[in-house]
Image 1 (cartoon, rainbow, N blue to C red):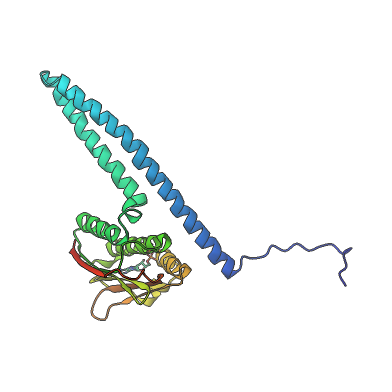
Image 2: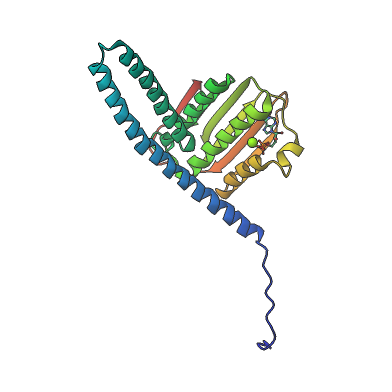
Length: 246
Ligand SMILES: Nc1ncnc2c1ncn2[C@@H]1O[C@H](COP(=O)(O)OP(=O)(O)O)[C@@H](O)[C@H]1O
Ligand SMILES: [Mg+2]
């Protein structure tokens, strides 16, 4: 039946849809791990180094405080160093906010919403209705990245003046809603083959058994709703709600 003498035909097998999804998930995971490692290194090593230089600077400032010209120069360098420390903190937090791992998802979203408002001047409200601080790290990362990408889209495309966001834990699901009051989105824009950012967000939610829906709000603007299942919380903990105007 099997003619082993005939030459074998080698056909490059195209990647199946499922394999592509696995590949996307794998790449996403390794990218996230790599970012966390780089963020740690920048924060710890470069941060440490700058702190040491800052200490040396203060000692010099003390030693040369009677030398007018020199102490003015030292003060200039000290200012530059302060900016360098801030930049290091910002870059490392942008790569991966450590508070996602330490303080939890709600605080990390709050921090990002505040940064967003400071940077853009767009009014941003975040309401947290969570029953705990910590979730499975993959779920927390997915929600955080979707939040980041959605707010980036608001800056780039919405022409909005206001964003209302909510993160709620309900019936073993985390539900993230981001609503802006901008010009709105069309189905063509959200489903088009160029919508790689939205595709990436959908994929993140899908990989964790969740869904992401995006549509134009009835009156004005765009709504992005993400639902991701979470394991039930331990019994005995009371829910806590929080409303922050960032
Ligand atoms: N909040 C929004 N308001 C209006 N249009 C939006 C919004 N978010 C996304 N869009 C539209 O959807 C398109 C696809 O978004 P996305 O996949 O993130 O790609 P990109 O941001 O790289 O253009 C955008 O080019 C834009 O036309
Ligand atoms: Mg985008």
